Length: 266
Image (cartoon, rainbow, N blue to C red; front, top):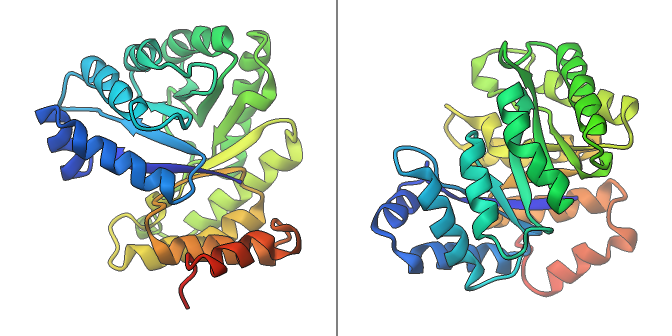
């Protein structure tokens, strides 16, 4: 499973201030800490209220001064994604995040994905918004896959975001997302799935407990990649233990290694 570090995001006050002040130390420190925690990909989201295009290019350059980890250029604005790719040295390793079943976002981002043969995150939603049911999300996923194939983009480069609904919004949210993941994996085994873990606990106290309890359910459902906080030690320990329990860690080697290195606290 691919772990994507989510902490360079201007929804966090410390990152918003760093972007506004053009403070490279704060951004670079956050990047290095996540890389040292063992992530595979580093997400960069520098949205409103800033000049997102200039801010994205600045943040990408600052991060690439201290690490060569693949970057996930994260925006709902295709122009900001293109700007991030322009600044990015490792374009072929980068991720474009995200598109949806919307013409403007497709046409703005897919040429980049095609040119650089990189990975792309696609939300299972269209112009009508987020589908209410797993069946509807899978239907949108099928349409997205068709567009990806028409562009000649390898389906293995596609990561379908199955959309986490906060459980605070009402019953049935967790089964809905898990059913979406399982059905996509069964119906379209040639594509990948991805989730933003922390969305599940929005609006609730004790969010970290909710997040780390949800993670094993996602792994069991077959998720391929997760946006999460890699600096949450208990969450990281839960990830290692869950992979061992669910046969995603051959002979529990990764679990044993993490325990011996002191990265699992009990």
